[in-house]
Length: 213
Image (cartoon, rainbow, N blue to C red; front, side):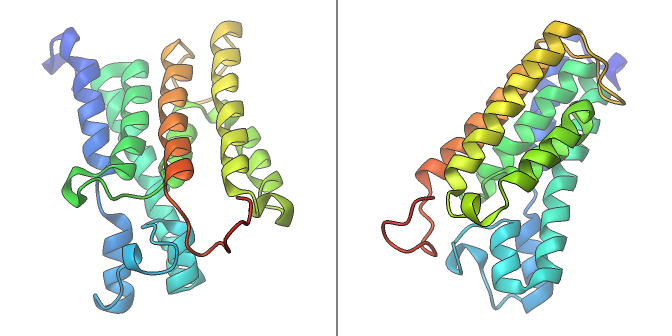
């Protein structure tokens, strides 16, 4: 697929493809299957069309399906991006899928918070860090951190970006992922920035007033 495109277009094409994959309305499709169209996650629970809200509104089984679909979007985008633009293309497409998930043009920019898509991005582009990512996720899923969702997200995002810088500068092996280059921490930074923005600017009506999150 790469050979069919001039080199100058490969990275933009990978990013555009990743964005389109990210805009796929996975939560909407699953919700329609689960409720026959009687529930809209954007008007239910926290109002976020993502896995956590689906888990709360639709139940654990459907919530897991939404989470899996969101992870799949990030992973699929990264795989397709690598076919189009190599390692840098994989990173660009993965980050763009998070942007597409959070700001889908088809839904007027009313998307999710991007965490699931970023997990798929990490699984494909940064597998060496994935166990660390899981460990941080486990740490921040404790009751103390769950009450501070924004702080937990900012912590995990910061560590993800710093991990990308470390692997790039040290040239450490990256499992089945692409060789670490500057594209890795840059893609992590873009995805983390978008996720942090969503957590900081989108209110969660399920939290009591004044409760730290």
